[in-house]
Each structure stands twice: as C-alpha cells, then as structure tokens.
Length: 120
Image (cartoon, rainbow, N blue to C red; front, side):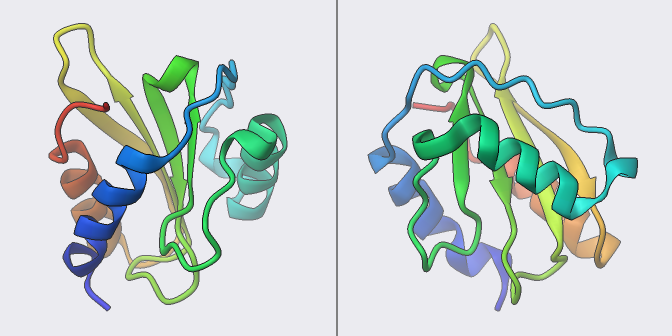
C-alpha cells in the first residue's frame, strides 16, 4: 500500500475528527521506542483520538486542534512510525517524528504530512 493512496482518506477523516481540548505535550524522544511513545500518546489523548479501527494512521489531535500525532499501523510503508504535525503561526504545517522502519518511507511520510496544508 502506498502512503499517497491513503492520503485522501486521511484528509477526510481529519476533517471529520472531533478535536478535544487535550493538552498533550508528549516529548518525541525516539530512543524510548515506538510502543512506549504510542502508549503515552494514546493514554494522554484518551478518547480524544478515538480513531477508526481501519485507519492506516490513527490520529490524536492535541493543543486545541493545532497539532496532532499520527501513529502508523502494520502494513503502512515505513511502519512503525509516529508523526507529530504542528501548525506554525503563519498557518503552515511542519512534521517531525520517529521512524523505526524503512527510513525512505518515513521521510516520504514526513514530507507528505507536512504538505497536507493547514490543520482545520
């Protein structure tokens, strides 16, 4: 499955997702490992993320909807990875994160998520 093939679904899901007022500030310390970061993000976001079971990148909105974490699922190129996307004051998006799988796929995902445009 190519990441670009799922981006339209991500945009649609992102537009429909409920954005809760969750002040998650999980530090992206990649040395902690995928499972530890995933557990912390999902625990702090709680039901605010409430991703669909079939989403390739369940998304957890934080900071009053101005940022989100997307956590890859098995089968996504570059899995496992966690992306942290934030919106700058001028409305641009920046993406950072931790890639534990194929680094070329992880870099493509970072670029594609940053290019999605303004967080609604």
